Amino acid sequence: MRFLLILLWSALGWGQAAAPKPAATLNDSDNARKARALVEQAVQALGGQAYLSYENRSERGRFYPLNHGRTNTVGIPYARFFKYPDKDRFEALHTHGTVKITERSDFILIHNGDKGYEVSFKGTTTEDPVETAAYLRRRTHSLDRVFRKWIADPGVELFYDGMAVADARATDRITLLNSQNDSVTVYLDQNSHLPAKSSYSWRDPEDKQRNVEEEVYDNYRPIQGIMTPHTVVRNFNGEMSQQRFVYAVKYNETMPDSMFEAAVTYDAKQGPRKR
Image 1 (cartoon, helix red, strand yellow):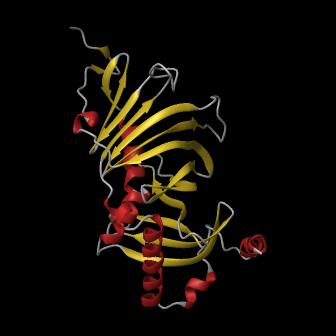
Image 2: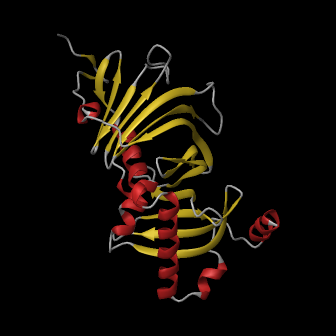
Image 3: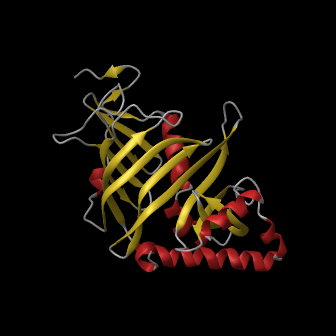
């Protein structure tokens, strides 16, 4: 039955490309109320207060960087430490330390506030500004920000866009629009009420092209009262750019701020500083 419904919705064009027809039958006030009710239902499905109040999260897993939907690696073990709202440390791991992620070097990435750093055997350098901007954009539109900050902002409007199919799942599509005319769309599984996908778009300041970034969430498991996706796929303009498979997650551990601090020791364009 569920498969037939998905085929029907696809045939009628109730996908992400256009706002589904059922939403048009709601007036503006009813539409906003329905959207907020669905988002609040999703927050409860994620764990309610446990989800809204967690302070930090650590995870270990394996990720696959992709180019045009393909990867040339067998997966890279990693550890990530996140301290809400703006501290993040990502480490490539190996049985005996870090492993090579690119041809350049082994590395650790640290993001603290609006700053990004790369740590390798050469030392510590500032992250490429383009990469930092991409990370900050993803963080701004992340599920944590949407459900913990966006929905609490009185200047954010919510719109129910109707039913849609996301990753072969029947979902309700909700768009959140802030006062800066920035928006993010979340797709909530109609059975579990958990987020199945999130999506946002932005215009490149250089080539003026509109880009669409998505994350797809699956394999949810309860961890310390919080429903946590253990499979995350990132898409860029319709192509897979990264897959992440999580093996272990912990919330509210002891994480000193020093984990997220970095002192620059060299300029990546000029090489290590002489001592």
